Length: 169
Image (tube, rainbow, N blue to C red; front, top):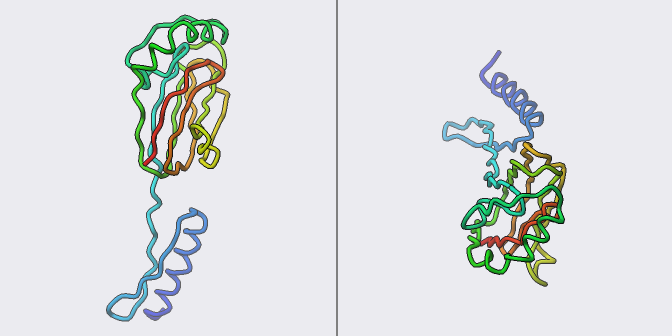
């Protein structure tokens, strides 16, 4: 097998692997006149971990209020009593535009939860959104999204939690 045919055989094999792996390829001309096929490394989305407990996301508030809930109505009652005061302690999440996985855990809530991310205000209609459920007690699920610059809020309408701020720059 000549050097030229060996190189071409390599290209065919690599191209086949790339298609199966779903990774992009690039053909690079080297100084000695030969070409090399390079695999471009696919950037993994950043993982943001969030923990849901009764009526709140822990990472988003200044403290764990240790609410007790058996049903969503319990959280509605708790939130009506103190959400205005709690909002003063919310820590807005700040992220750069890009791909993210929100890894959300239900550590103790005895009913199914979810995750809802959307643009805030009128301008939010043009921003990406995502929602999903199936988050039973003790379970962790991943919710993948590509975020554009803007102001968002996230919550769990099934828990229910307040809307927490997220700013994407």
